[in-house]
Length: 186
Image (cartoon, rainbow, N blue to C red):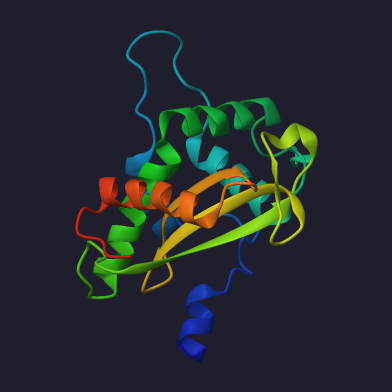
């Protein structure tokens, strides 16, 4: 897609406090995917939109949790939601639904039928989880296998030690893809 004055205005984020903040239309897509209030226990006082914006701020800036600006919820609260949503599989569910919505918005079939798998090995610290040595790339760290559809949407991803061969890692991604999109061809 070429940048035109119309598309520039559509994607410009100068009017937001941070470029990572959500517009109302973006939040309208994500809000239904957020966890509902619990019927029992203490009522939630935290605004989940601000939590999501804080997580997006950390992801886009790369800052540490403790360096989160003060007008966001407390970093411990944001961190707690982030890791809880990982355990619940909420991030994967959000990605799945947003891929479907994006494909439909582009006039495509909701379920992708074809895609590509690629891998990348990156150096990691010892405390970043299990790591291994990728002899082909001479890197000690972790490897990620990512599958995308023809529009470039991430459909599935698997992260493991770098010593896992591509021939062994690709079936792990393929299995995850087939569970989400049964007709997907790689």
